[in-house]
Length: 101
Image (tube, rainbow, N blue to C red):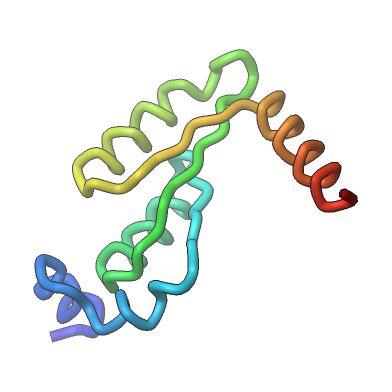
């Protein structure tokens, strides 16, 4: 039995990795492409808790990809945050301003 398969079969019970990584807040940027899906699936199978983030681009031209990401996360009970470049820029600017105070 492979390493990932071993962890995947015990996914319904708490993983030793849950405790090891519980002090970290891990986010995975998910585009709907194979790279981000493999990354997310690896974390999921290993039992490493994470949350997903998507970015709506080009006036929604990537909406089909984002629907795929949304369904992927929903099936696995993964928290997903959706944002746009405008909201990301505001969050980064706000964060930099707060850090200066």
